[in-house]
Length: 73
Image 1 (cartoon, rainbow, N blue to C red):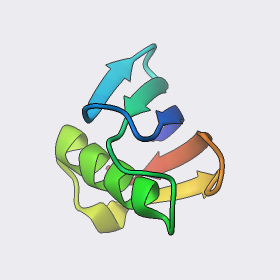
Image 2 (cartoon, rainbow, N blue to C red; image 1 turned 135 degrees about the vertical axis):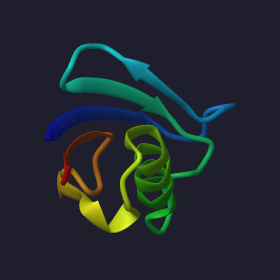
Image 3 (cartoon, rainbow, N blue to C red; image 1 turned 180 degrees about the vertical axis):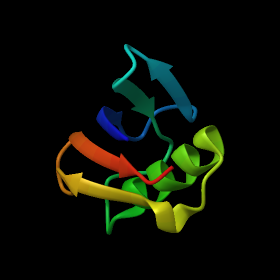
């Protein structure tokens, strides 16, 4: 499964907002420094989709707010 995700770092809470079946907006408390926001994003998606963190990969946009994430189901 591939998801288009817009990440909003340094938010007041961690929250997933579903825009459509393949698009999400994710608010993260982590800052976009040293990959902290990416780690938190993978952790939150892992809990939401009930898969191991190792099954989630950022395919595109590692340093961007707009990311493409692939989840092995």
